[in-house]
Image (cartoon, rainbow, N blue to C red; front, side, top):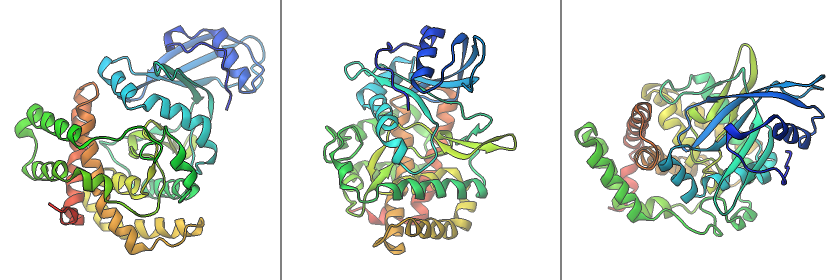
Length: 362
């Protein structure tokens, strides 16, 4: 990855041909950008993504015709969330320090910089087109789900029980991390969610939400198994899928929540919402068996399938929890409401199917 520390951190409308030329040269491309134009892409709610089309003076010498940049959200509430939770710093540091060893497919990062005081940041990355973004509302096919779980296994195996990860302060849930999500905050967000949406929340979801907030300490601290790198927002909207025209089979993006915890925090979270309930139930055992076998092929040992399935049930709360907490701390949009309720429904169904409420002490 190219790092050009003397370049200023700028918003996407301030990027000039000279600025982009310096980025590309820092990444090893000896070309000169003549013109640049940008267009927003994606549906991210805590960050803003922009595709830049580049034209060159003379021979491009293999430099890309397009790149994608990522910047802080222009919405004040969403930006405050990114700053307060360290999301922007975390994502830049992932690309700087962990992307190369994380095992799975991510976009090649050309430039990454962040101001540790303000959290202003800029990422310039490979454009993954003609791959297409996944869509939480549409979900994934069985074939796509298998591709995703293969990437998950490679990612989780890459730093399995690597104690060095616990010394990294910018990773979520490490021993060195400066702060954690407090139960009282979760309770306040759930209360706000109920007040905002009222009767729109199904009765079984109200029961699950009340149980989560009563027992949040157990949900967050009840895990004592093996640890690995985790994405923590592992859903179709944060993935790019190859098409007939090309692209990687699947690549994972949006590393604002990367942490060190239980592998099922990703797998259970993904399967809760990416597949229709009947499809998940029909293929769940097959998919989880293949994922566990792949972990073992990649060198993971001492983690039985039965132990994994207990963690799968415990982390069936994850998508439900994300649905109501994220909806209250980012910009509210019509698509966001639809997506968060789809996530909540999928999460609730998963909790009920795994009988996860029985795992809570209260």
